[in-house]
Image (cartoon, rainbow, N blue to C red; front, top):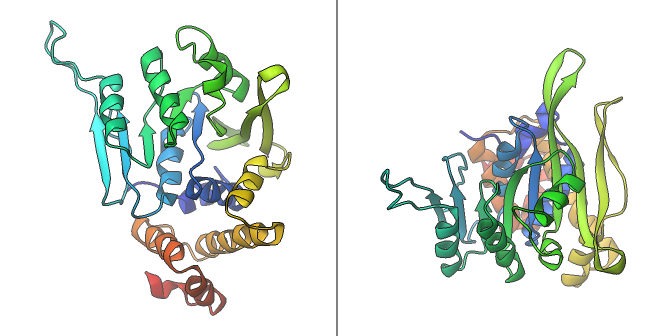
Length: 287
């Protein structure tokens, strides 16, 4: 079974606060990219945070190798295929992306953006036309992500790059004598000076404490607030409720796939009822 957000919090890859941020972002259709080196946990994190996608939404995933696993009934899993030695019959990422966009998914997951410009352009075009899109990339910082996207062979135009809302950086490193995976930084992309793409660091991992710290105030959360017609108090309420739920599941070790999904989806449907059960210490009734 795939690892859940609770597993990744318990492993120390994320904090409760950073996972709450992702929950809010995903429920409000923001797009994001996980970047890092080989075996840094990019796809594992992508799969885990995708469990926050609302239950009834249409999801399409496109991969070279089957790694993404989701519980959504309306999920279409697409995998590339090599044809004959002559090259005929190949079904690559670009063809699958074209087919996926014709099916109008609310959420689009692409296993990895590598060197195919057509794939990168189609992915960013999907975001520009209102799809929430998630992917991974080999890069060690947000600045490297932007450089890879904007320069050959990908050469994604600047105005399209800004359709990406969030970049999260993963690393495999040592804490003491333990080899661990950490999400070392979460950044938001925004319009910078003279039309360039600006980077706003939201969370950073502190190697001295092996903890996560807030860097700058999130503009994306404020956009969510305005879009939903909330005031500041309502935004903080929405964040604190989700944070309490995640913290309760971490403390009670409610980390298995089915239990986690049952609680999150029930919260989506009936938040007041779930919070009442949480207040009474009876959240396990939902499992």
